[in-house]
Image (cartoon, rainbow over all chains, first blue to last red; front, side, top):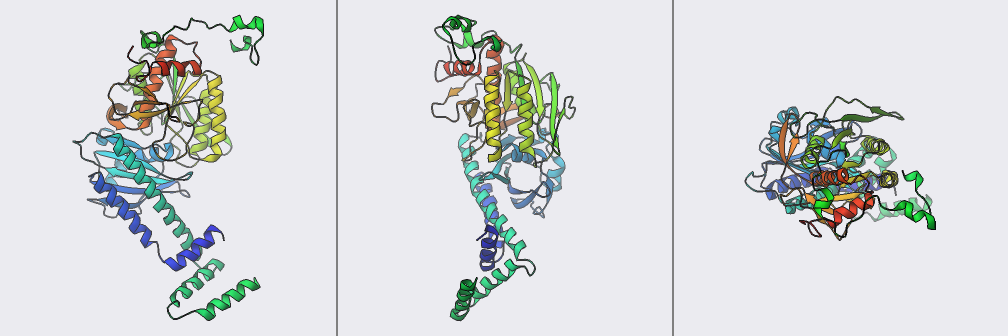
Length: 209
Length: 272
């Protein structure tokens, strides 16, 4: 089975990407909590348009942050994306070119930020940011390690999200993958009432193919 | 000078010709390594987001180059006027100058044209920098793309044999990335101390040295300063110290330079 086909069938059974969104939301919520920060967000790289897209946010003024797009080389997140290096910066305000437009358009201008690349195998999926951790505590390497571990988890979640999206694209329309996933969906729905005859039919079809 | 040396084998009468230009002392101390040195004469290249010339913590930048790729063509803009597109390159340059104030600084900008193609630009930028024969190349960048790994490996070895010391940021995440993992470069991670001259040899590589990388006050765009943490700020500490050593001992090969850094590391012979 191709990855796409497998994903399409799985998505037909599992349903929407809502669960993945919930997972991402939980990651930013927990990231914000463990670093006692004011905000946290995940930006995903859209390779087709070469843009970073906000996928999840936990902050005081998140508003309609989700879905906002920025050029992939914008500001500190852009550097983290391209360099694969995590950065922790205090007092971002003293950097006049820290994408102030970007920050202001999101309704939130941070004083400090931690940004870490979301790496999955050899791909860079995006950037996890934690904004405005308490200024009274000195940053430690232990926190850096925690940030890296966290980013790893977020990257796995993002990879799942992207697979789900590819699956939904494959499901759209009347293509052959659509048929297979609809079949899987119907079989799943009939599980309670018994679907022996349908399964037998499919087994015959498989033999025929 | 290397052309006059026996390259592939050493005949009996040739042994004298490869005598070291300077006697290697019985004990390598920091005083021997860089005492009185200012970095003068050492050429340091910062492969990054550009450098803001004239920043109070950076001073003059001797050359600014930008690398880009259009189609199959590599464009080398030899008089880049964009400065620093992020602030990070300026930060690295400021750290290097704080340790080696009189070194020559060259900026090779490999960022700015978006994410797509950034790996290829990084490769071309490094290629260009090695061809210029800089003494030290500071590289706080890496790629995770396997297809670039063997090319980067070749470039890192070429640099090593041409007496260019590549100093690269290690990764603090469980991910394979390059070129810092190659043994022909110096890879740098962070320690938490405040002394910019405190650096440690790591007997369990691939990270070879630890340098100051936590809460470092660095130069940033617009003449600004920021307090930053990350291995990419530890790296220019080692690059700066390497520039000091090379300004006093320009004859050192990367192997010898690495040996000197080992022998003068804080946990080896440092402080003497």
